[in-house]
Length: 493
Image (cartoon, rainbow, N blue to C red; front, top):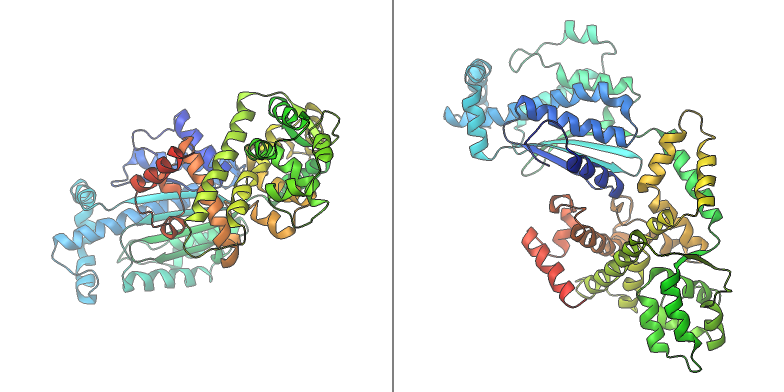
């Protein structure tokens, strides 16, 4: 996101929506944090809360955000100030000496010190991410905490537990060395007012950054409503949505006296709905079947002709349109990327792994297809269900339509189709890696990276939003490397 204006334009607002839809972080960076830029940070936060329907948090978070951004900016100013004065910020005597005039000196010459911060590459970042039903807010700056600062912050957090009233805090807590010292305490008290505790607030340093985290639960009533509606929606899904033009092509192949099974295999594997259709019938004969070649071997010519016939009651025939075609193309691309990423994985080898990851990529985001192929009858049913939640109907329906339900839809639909719990979980958690065990993550991170590559190509994801741990598994350090891998894969697609 840019520093040009404090207001979000349509493109930037859409980036926030896309990040929420895909449950990826959205990040804003500034080196000087001007008033306009601070207002822009707030604008991003407010749009994020609006799209998540957590507007009631705005009043509290605007104060918290302002305080934390100021603290991060001040920490950066402190580093360049100490450097200019020839003082070691990690030395106790130098720290005490520097803090004697820090506030007065920097107040009178703040533009000078902000310019120094910019030259030193010292930034302040705001990162927001929806993680299932929680919002993770992070304020980062690349000035690592000193032991003195860590101790002071720890004391403030402990002090906050002693107070329940703002007036008590103001009259009892003063810290003239670095300002009033009320900010962190008031933030914790404000979080308590919305039902949270100090566990929802953390400040810590890595090797390169200081990070302040606030973890906020979303309105449980809204997300519980979305989950129930998703479950009921899948109960209606007794058929597999297939595009007529794709189906007719396959129907012609099986109509021949002798079915060309190699041609059939190639045709089915390019379409997630057709692949799911044939696996549905194969699973009735072998509950562990997760391979299109194996599925074809299980089914006779007569059975194949029935599966790919107009009279098959398992098919919900849909007219093609650009959006539906793009969803299937996306799935095919993810399948191909997943297949190739597995081939190049260093520490992961599975029986028939190439076929497994191709199909996993193909089915990985099937919930999106289910959302976009709903019939008018199904849409009306969902509307009627949401209307039962008085006062929350529109919010529940909006979150459902946005796509936040797609993971859960994938999970329960794949189970309904006959896949095991283990397989269904792996096909529905690509963007919730933090919920998985280390073993599960080894497999699912391939699907994550395959999805991210496809979304990146579609312009829905920026490089900074990609999980750094997953990138490191594939020794990807720069965006240029990432682009080169995608190009190489596409050249052979």
